[in-house]
Length: 205
Image (cartoon, rainbow, N blue to C red; front, side):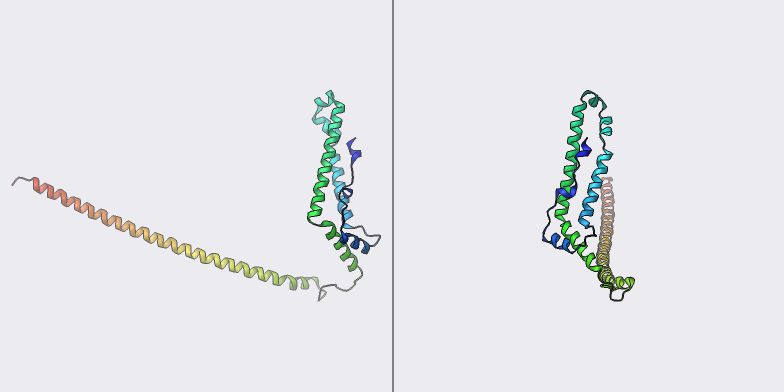
């Protein structure tokens, strides 16, 4: 069966830099590194994925072909599972390499291990998490508030300019309409005068 061909993801990308080796030396023998935990999670995911796509379910989807070529169906399934696992391992390795996850996780393990030896409140000046969090985050949020205020003020100024432009455009349209009406009235008056003149010329003396 294809399930027997599973290989741990951690064995697929074991390249570790000097950061990983130095961090591992700090960890105690009873501590499980986060890199191993990540590899175990990926292995568990692959096991559940293969279990969900079992050979029985695969043959249920291709019953006719399975009855005609059972051995060929088995080989196709094994090849499919192998390629699926390989592609997932390669993708995980690329993600770990791009994000330098092994070095980051090992450094985090080292920080946690070193923190276990300190009993004082660590970096917190007052020892009260809520107070120290507010003192650390308040400047950032104030800076963000000021930036948002500047954006709002800029947008409001642009909106006022647009509103003034719209009003000016409306006034221009009204002026043009008045000019058109005045010209239309003048043309109508001229037309009436021409008709009256023509009528007077046609009347017999």
